[in-house]
Amino acid sequence: MNQLVQKPDGRRNRHAGRRQELLEQAADYVAAHGLNDLSVRDLAAGVGLSHRTLLYHFGSKDQLLREVLDHIRARDGARIRAALAADPTTSAAELLRVAWGFFSSPARTDFVRLYHQVFALGLSGEPWAFWSRTVVAARTSAIAASLQVRGCPASRATAAATLVVASIRGLQLHLLTTNDRTGTDAAFEELVLVIEAQLGALSR
Image 1: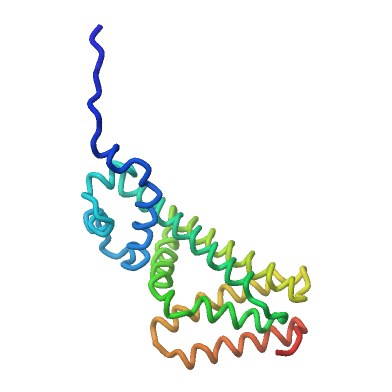
Image 2: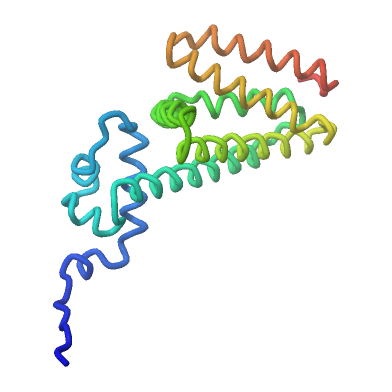
């Protein structure tokens, strides 16, 4: 019986072990450029490959995009947890101010745009909706845990964190739309004061 002899695949050998690096680079590109009019050719050029080679590593555009978004979600979640963990403040109000400073940082503008693009797509169904729910759940859990450490009752921490996460999402969109930093910061401060009063948090 004739046996099929496979020729060495130069592309696989050349890029062996680079998949994680390519995923990181692709995530950077998507975070910077968003999903609108995204093409595999542009994404491949952004990471220095041909579109055929990029698809060879990830199988299809859908699979590539799914893995890229999952990587972005996991990477950003780790950054959020690190930022909250590094916060030395002891009051819930100060924690929320730190959180808003992080989430509304100009350095995060590209990610915020991407997040809202995916969130809008999620309103139409999967797989976008799952991604959005996962991001929201992770942020809510992280903030709830940080609030509890600072004296927020466990029975109210999740509800308070849900309010904060939803408000941050809305205010991020407001900031992107209006570019009114002063007004948006003032609106978040009003929220902090209300939560501080309701939870009986320590004064600033």
